[in-house]
Image: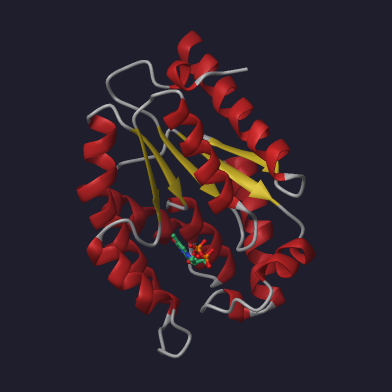
Length: 217
Ligand code: TYD
């Protein structure tokens, strides 16, 4: 069983991201993970995308509002503007200062939603994302994989711009995450359909295995 101190043993702290389709439970899991760090006395910062700064939270309102018309590329630009500010103001300074960052969503969401969901070309998205982040990449991204029916049951009446897109869109996002998880380095997929405690344990195990492999490299 890993411990948070084993996962942050140098001055430059890790940057972990939890990902998954709406309803995958990543926000709950991100909170539990941050609590684990805090309980161990490790400096940790929990944040989210789109969001995490005053500018990005403002943009989040526009990005998620289904009543405001928004072309796919306009949506992308707002998401990336929010990310650029998030990296510059919050993520990079924290990581460089030895604070572990846990973000609820980051770049993989853009590939899954704007790429597989909206159909924008993945190579363009990767390039544009690199412009926004200036090369700031997560240490590890963990995707919580759940069946679409489970996601829909959990989403319930919530209907932001993306949740309101319907089944076919979210199915493409779920499959996009699976494809990306199998291809991308620094991405791991775990089963997010089980009980909360079991999923949390699986996340900690993945983080621990990754830290061990990085130590031995
Ligand atoms: P989230 O905070 O997970 O929604 P909620 O608060 O309803 O749980 O994410 C907001 C939405 O933003 C989500 O439906 C996915 C979308 N999104 C993208 O489409 N691309 C991105 O790059 C990001 C970060 C989010």
